[in-house]
Image 1: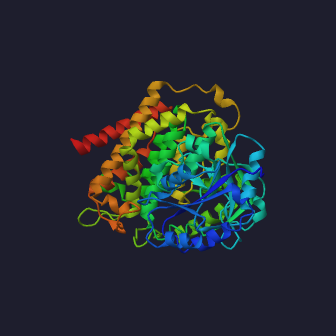
Image 2: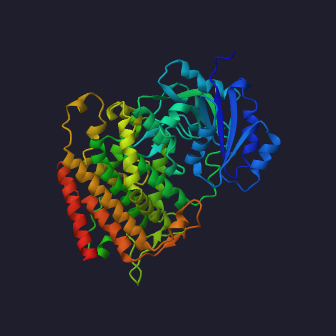
Image 3: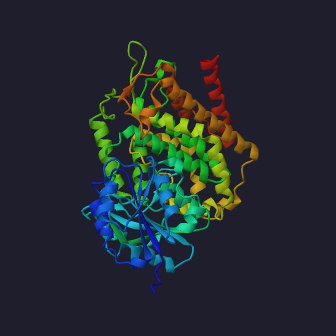
Amino acid sequence: MSTLPSVSVIVLNYNSLEHLPANLEALSHLDYPADRLDMVLVDNASTDESVEWVAAHYPAVRIVRNRSNLGFAAGNNVGAEAASGEWLAILNPDIRVQPDWLRELVRPLAQDPAIVSVASKMLNWEGTAIDFADAALNFMGWGNQPGLGSRDLHRYDTPKPLLFPCGGAMLVRRDVFLEAGGFDPAYFAYFEDVDLGWRLWLMGYKVVYAPRAVVYHRHHGSWQAVPGPKTWALSERNTLLTVLKNYNDDHLARIFPAALLLTLQRAFLDVRPDPTAFGLPHTFIFTSWRYYAYEIGQLVRHGRFLELIRRTAAELRRRLMPNDAPPPVKLPESWQQPAEDGRFQVPAVALSRLLAGSDVFQQWEEVMAQRAAIQAQRQRHDEDIFPLFQSPLLSNFGNAQFILAMNQAIGKFKLVRLFQNGNGWKKRKPLTPEVRAASLSLSHRLLQLMAEAFAASQADEQAFRVTGGTPAPVYEPPDRCVAFLAHANYWLWTLPDGDLPTVLAYLQQQIDLWEQKNYA
């Protein structure tokens, strides 16, 4: 009798007929005992005859049909409920596995009973470059994959703990997955694996990387047809949800308002409205050699050499081609001036960011209940988990002006000391309940303002949903929508020096002034 654990391999399908032949052919050659395998295809209401093709060509695969497209998160949760194995191997349809993939994926389980999830080594389809072999997170909840695109494959041959596995090819213990609530179904797709990994560590479990468990991935093969503003709406919302649920109370109080201001900063930089059109000064600080020296030093320190190359190339493009906004929008070199009717051109992606805040605002009560349940399961301090972030103060966005804004928020909210290694955190004076409550109240109001700004844009919300229509490339919303972005930019760049109560009081004062001006 085999000592290997029983595993249910779950492949989530949505119109993936072009990918499934390679995927299932590779799975059929797994070097794993057949009596320990349960092959499950979960279908999210496909219309491309992929289900019929699988039934005809791979009758041993169990098919679970959903009545609608539930997305990656909820779709895989359905598979987990239907699975019979002790462990779940979650696999994207646009992946092919090596024959020994599953044996190598379960190998680390014998080392430590606390290991409940294992990440694969993911290469590109040709096997020439890294797709996923490491995991990092910044304080705003944006996960990233150090080494993405690297052709130095052997550099990532060392097993190690990771904050999260990539959901495209991962192993997780079924009972723990269900105990943790599975992937958060509200995410639909994007960063649900980040959220799950963080929760597992918070609950006292471990996630590790198995470099010999190799798969090949057509990167985002299943999402190529989805317009960018739709995916940005998901990404922006899900990072905010991850932050809101998983930090402890003191860290949330410092980090969440900073994350919201930086979400608004990204929307502001998408539009680049001239602040003087709203009676505001040009408060933005432009790049200097000190900025570049600091960022280069940080990237080198963390071994992010490929990212350094990418950022350098992006900065050269920015300087040589200042009109590099997302096509087809052409923005001026510096600030966008209003048209004769007083309106600004707003790219759809800027509204995606506002919609993300609106979604969190609408889900606030539910998310806070989730947060309470997650915090009740806490077995580890945040400070014990933070080293797994690897680069908590680095930006996922190469835009130099945004990185300056991020550094502004880091400084004003005193975030550097939160992520310092050592035991100094045990000596920090905790925030009072009043300060925590003030931060949550302020954050809730910022989310409400984002919801009001999106509503003021008069854009069709359904056009930004994955299952909805198609957003327009450019919108021309009423002035109040763009004015809010300009004011949020002003608030960020005029934050006072001082403790957290001082910063929160200033922001509350500015919000009150905004409301008096717009709702009097």
